Amino acid sequence: MRRIFYLFFVFGGILQAQIGGHSVYQFLNLSISAKQAAFGGKVFTGMNHDIFQPAYNPATLDSVMDGHLGANYVSYLGDINYGNVAYAKTFNKLGTLYAAVSYVNYGKFQYATEDGSRDGSTFSASEGALILGYSYTIPNSKFSVGASTKIILSNLRNYSSAGIAFDLGLLYRNEKSGVQYALAARNFGTQLSRYQDVKEKIPFEIDFSFSKSFAHAPFKWYFTLENLQKPKIAFVNTAHNTQDPDGEEVEENITLINHAFRHVIVGVELFPKKKINLRVGYNFRRAAELGLKDQRFSSGLSFGLGINLRKFQFNYSYGSYNYASNAGFFSVIVKLDEF
Image (cartoon, rainbow, N blue to C red):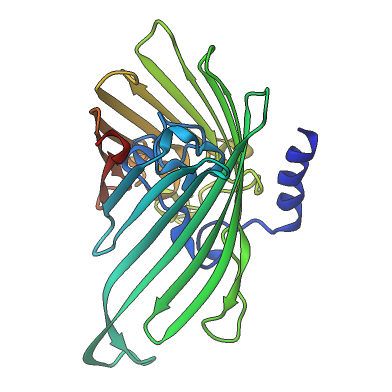
């Protein structure tokens, strides 16, 4: 096991940390399912064999997902919408394989020259990725390891780019105690072709999750530390600036405690083993960086509802980003092996 952990931290040391607008293909870090979004945006442990999970941590892929087909749609901020389709299949000699396609459509834009003049023409922008994954359960242990490859295509008006990225995942699962630990190194890779002549970086990150379910309590809770490769993660939110007695603007003071909490995402699921689940999550970084001065808390909140049937799963979630923008997520999973 030491070698497995060593791989994660070697990649973390080699690749430079990238947050926010400092790298291309940022859509790779969008929440990829309604269940993910309900828990604050990022969970890396297993979530009741959710078919969308291997796209975030390939180690969560297992044979229970055999024949599961899932589709997710998101009405995101402004005119942006995105979605994905995922499928898993078990082969006797190979184990369980995973395939998914993700896309994001940024909508229509008005074309303007550098001096701001417009001729009424418009253009569009979109990105997408093909994800192929595999996992392996280590014999006589509670550990699973997984890896996935992402083939990335991006089109921004007349500019296009292609890239390749890889994920490594590690999962510890103790069914008896209900405890799971997960570690994921995500999106290490490179551009295969550039928009122009400048090579840009892929949004690499290292993430850790812990989850716990209880045999005699109707809830399960999730705890995630995101972007561990970059200890100082925070951005200044100018909406939180103040003024000194002389009327001069004073920039928001971000302390080490502020940086620490912005790595944290928490979530709770009520009735995880029942047909109807209720979910709530809180993303501290989203609340701090997108919330207005008097409305920080609500900007990090998200809520969700799940309905579990023998052949289908339906999930819906609602995420609050700031006072002006929210997003709705809808996912459906079909268990083809039940037909």
